[in-house]
Length: 145
Ligand code: DQA
Image 1: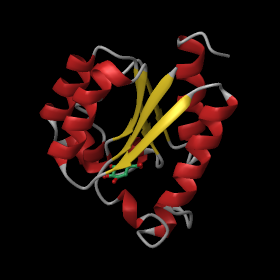
Image 2 (image 1 turned 135 degrees about the horizontal axis):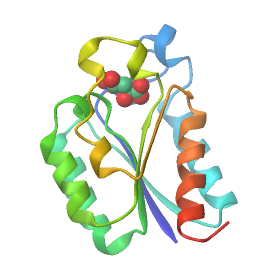
Image 3 (image 1 turned 90 degrees about the vertical axis):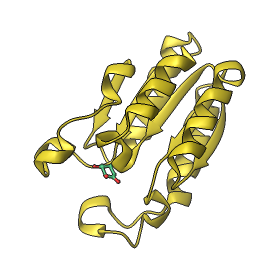
């Protein structure tokens, strides 16, 4: 099985961006953790971070035929993007939505997600471990653990 693991806007700034909320670890740490979690679950992982909504959407469309599941931290697009949610529905793949922080303890505008209705599971507030839980959940859905 093969996973597409997507990180949205500003997540390339992890480590320097609001460390009180997101911690000191970097996008590279996230990607290493994801690769390791996928390998341990017997899955291949393709990783992409983009600050551009259309780039994320194109990758989701491509995943329809090249991946078996999607892990996505849509970052701020969570709260704004009908287009990403529609692309995820069009992909017809199991999707797990991840947020490093617990968005529900933060500003009101972070409490609503356009993406959640297109996801089989949502993980928020588990820090970087959330990515591992997402990978493990997809592995169990795909019958690879
Ligand atoms: C985030 C939460 C979002 O509200 C925020 O815009 C992000 C990161 C998280 O991982 O906690 O950029 O998705």
